[in-house]
Image 1 (spheres, rainbow, N blue to C red):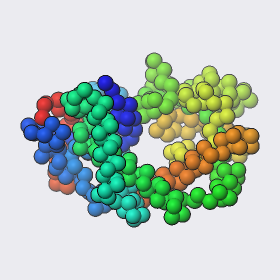
Image 2 (cartoon, helix red, strand yellow; image 1 turned 30 degrees about the vertical axis):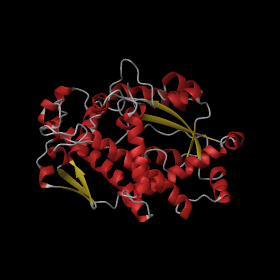
Image 3 (cartoon, rainbow, N blue to C red; image 1 turned 120 degrees about the vertical axis):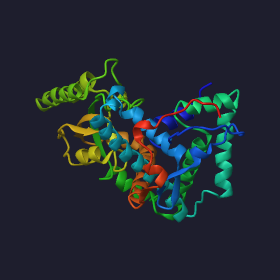
Image 4 (cartoon, one colour; image 1 turned 90 degrees about the horizontal axis):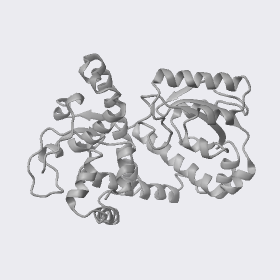
Length: 353
């Protein structure tokens, strides 16, 4: 049986390893020596080959449009550089959680953290008929047990860190301050026409509608241009969302987004926050696709009805910004073993351990 948590983790962003030949291992859940080899460091944290592999292979799957492109040296070099950049950023963000957690009194080896991780692992494994099925499902996301355990440790530490920051005031929990932010300049109301190209659709899988015949990037941009022209000519924006947009959220929510800093990619946030009420943006390209934004007046009735949700959104977004800030401080270095790895050769071996 499939476990939803595994699908969410493997689809999201963020971490993977490389396999250079597996050897037999007496522990069916254990990693091989090759998988445990340190290929990078992030600050003071060591990155094992298996975790690097997980990230590389997921990003490789994400950006590859045509497998034949890997046979073109120029294209392969460009894709490898893009993957390396994504991997490094993901690693910084991932280990920034551990670094901030430590600074706020939350430690990986804390008994409560370890107990919570063990409970998550046990609950996941109990959902399978055998360890073989469990490992087979992990493998669909290029993960082994050690990587999954590391991801769960990060998840537990992240939640503990969030509440620690709420308690110590790093993230505001003051009701009066939150009220001013929610009703004031902390949030803006945005509607979006999102058109997805071939290089975006896999990134946004599960959060946007990707047509059966996926657009090329050029086709998606042309569609966005057509939608923008109609919007600027005064056509109803909601109607254009229905006609051209590919965002599940916008299909089902005519209120649009109530946006605060830290929720989206900065390129989208910068464009949205630069708008005055009633203004329409130019076409903005992000990892999600090509966007056109309309800023609208906030609805006090909506805010009152969703106040607690918006407060939670704000504090979670502030948490994300703090993680991003810390990630910029962490230096990523490759070890000798890491320098020997070529992105194009990274693959998942189906050999039994």
